[in-house]
Length: 443
Image (cartoon, rainbow, N blue to C red; front, side, top):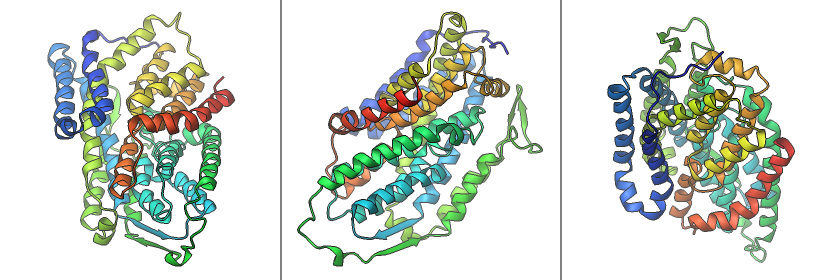
């Protein structure tokens, strides 16, 4: 199907709000944290409304902004139910810190990340992981947790990581990720745990101390009923009229829109919080700060990236005869941008470029299905792995990274600075593994 070129392309300067917002997200928490903390929501909403207003009144286009807001509603409603339901489960693990205990914990948590998402898994597992290692807790414990749980672990389902869920909303089949990404996932997990083993063996904090009597060897879960809400939130992902025939929907310019899924998820989020176990919430020190930040920032991101996506589509369409995309190029370009920007908008921008180069339109569901049946789908595999894995390279690559860092610092862990995180951990540990992934799968 030939790409549908928009009647009136947005002016190139309209990309500036998107670039400005991403740069502020990257630098604000580091360079001017106080100002950013107080005004980030105003900045994000203001820039988003600026772009949306220009589309409606200057370009006379109401379709794309409404479609974008519908995708935003789907995105944030899933994150909300995962975040609240996970926050109401207090996972108390009090076993002695041993190398194989930590490795088993991280591996199991990485698997669960695909069920409850990187945000939910980070909230649920970071405190019990720190409790296990409370007598020998070092910054590297938190860094490897960010590598494995907040990023790489969630590669097997669209629920696992936001970029993959954005692909699912565009029409990528739910089980495609598990079928095509399990090999890079397994190599990355084994490689990271192997390096973690070396760090653990070098941690001699307790070599001359017997602390076994300080552990109760108990594993307790408070707030078990929240698993029901969690299961409900996950199962509603499939309530899509494009997947299940017979669901009521609104025909919006050829697209099937139905908000049954979002209504159920948000209603379940409210009920989940109202009836949550208070002790579990207190044990997790639960609050809404993290999910509110994601909601405000992504409102601006979704609206501001509309002209960027359209410009990429137009560029790919005009240059389709000379544009050569390889798996290695897509893997490294999406990865590098995901490192310094948020990986969800990076995924969408590169996805738009890939489809447009093949004469498909990312915003047409049938086009995405046709693309999934073409040979170019290998590029999507490189994009998916690159955007998810490289999100761990910096604190700003993925939302849960900063959240885990803040929780660790609240307990007294002296976390590495933005630069030291990259210099001491990402470059010497993560980057060689990413190179290995490239050589094995994306040459």
